[in-house]
Each structure stands twice: as C-alpha cells, then as structure tokens.
Image (cartoon, rainbow, N blue to C red; front, side):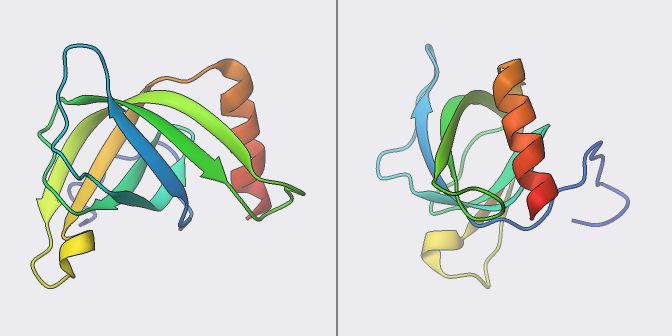
Length: 121
C-alpha cells in the first residue's frame, strides 16, 4: 500500500496467523476460500487470500494468536468488513489477493487481549 492510500489508525505488525472465515448473515463467501494474515492491528487485519472478496462483505473471523508472550495459543472471534481487495498477479494463486478488513465487532476483552499480544511481538 502506498502512503497516499494508507489510512490506518493503528500500527500493524507483520503477523502470520491462521484465520478462519465464515459469512456473516446475509453475506456469501466464495467456495474454497483460504486465507492467512499478513498483518494485524486492534482495528483490523490484512490477509492474503486465494480468491477475490468484494468490498463491504461482512465476515466472521476466528484468529488464532500464537507466539509473543503467549504460553499457549489463544483465539479471538470478531466480525470484519472488507475494505479493499487488491489482486497481486506476481504472487502464487494461494496468496493472489491482499484483502484489508476493518473489525466491526470486537469484544472489549478480545481487544485488550489482541493489544497485549501485538505489544509482545
């Protein structure tokens, strides 16, 4: 992302985490969707996906936090809205699309847990 289009409010450290996606009510996801995070912040996440996601799509996400100060993996469940989806033609098919998502629902305790995790990276 260029500095001209980057409107992030939170620092996003690089973090490669497993993420499970499912559609929020009233939304549809492409079959066979696979994703891994590229970076994470308390306000959202950027993922590499194998298929295009339409902006404004609402998803349910489960992020598995590993490493940092954690003694064992922890999960965070949230809803997120797709803000951007950019095709990266030079990337392999499994990581062809960079998808920026903004968290739309994140419980206060999960936000604290995520912030502590990010601070420990």
